[in-house]
Length: 436
Ligand SMILES: NC(=O)c1ccc[n+]([C@@H]2O[C@H](COP(=O)([O-])OP(=O)(O)OC[C@H]3O[C@@H](n4cnc5c(N)ncnc54)[C@H](OP(=O)(O)O)[C@@H]3O)[C@@H](O)[C@H]2O)c1
Image (tube, rainbow, N blue to C red):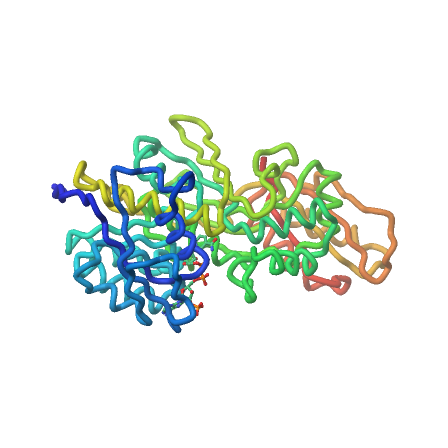
């Protein structure tokens, strides 16, 4: 039985991390006039703020607040009912959140890396102390997704969830698609506009999306997923050619996280580039937005799209958790990862993933290359669907594309390994599943 706790007419908040999202949250909670918080039945009051080198951060517009260097000071403070963790990273955030939960403080965080690494343990600490852990903003930023998955989809037999889970990657891909930029130019644009960090590795390499996918899989499929279970690849291998060939095929590249239930009790998890149809919902998602497609045996397809990042949108999702917390005495609450503990599913491999594929080669032109590749594909029981070859301008690095009919990905991997050993490759072949 979940105990019903008293509600908080005033929820006193300790805010750790006064950066992009932390400041946006403080502005949201203290705004007046037309921008004032919408829910007047709850009072959310920031009593303490922590940030390293805090003197730089003191804000005159946030009066009556104690300022601290170390977030740990908030975790035990008597005038704090809930802490909001917005420092990011894993080590310090873990220490802070665990201490706060153990001390009975509710925790709201936007930190997907923390939850992917330690979510189950932190939920157990929360359950032991009677505190709540909430993290709506940790996946898909401002899109209300996790609460909907945990509560509204609890009655659905889900078959797959796929999504554009990283706004930086999506911004880069749509810049390449629509503005004809190279990968390097689009990444530089993303950094200039504040969509990408100085070190963009986690975003463009797929790890950020993989952390979010692990949280989605935990809630929606009741499975503990580690990052090692997720086949993860980045967008760095894409070239302007892929957008030109993609257009000819009625497709465009999108970086998708995918969790799919496979017949025979398997779960397939990946983050990588898919070639999606240009008239698909995913193709319509441009710039730093996020989108998620939930497929259910019971209800069909559901599509959510919106602001996946940004201070204001993310702070609004954090705010929704705080409102829920301040009202949690009015109804029993569900733990963050939900109550769905499914029978364990084995981690499916590329043998279980069947799709048509886009294969792009960049070769040093010489006679017989196509025949060599076609022979290798045929040896692996792979049927060619089409061969696309633009007029040959660069003999030094000559790109062309082969699309193949639906086949288990393990066969594609074996064939590519063999082709990679051939003498004509200028760069490793790119293979992307082609999805609707
Ligand atoms: N920004 C978004 O659009 C977005 C969207 C969804 C989720 N999130 C998540 O929200 C969290 C915060 O993101 P953000 O964009 O607001 O980051 P940010 O702008 O870098 O802000 C983090 C703040 O925390 C401070 N900080 C970092 N480590 C600290 C430590 N050990 N002790 C004390 N203070 C520390 C930083 O101080 P310095 O100024 O010294 O660096 C900075 O002011 C992250 O977990 C992120 O993944 C962000």
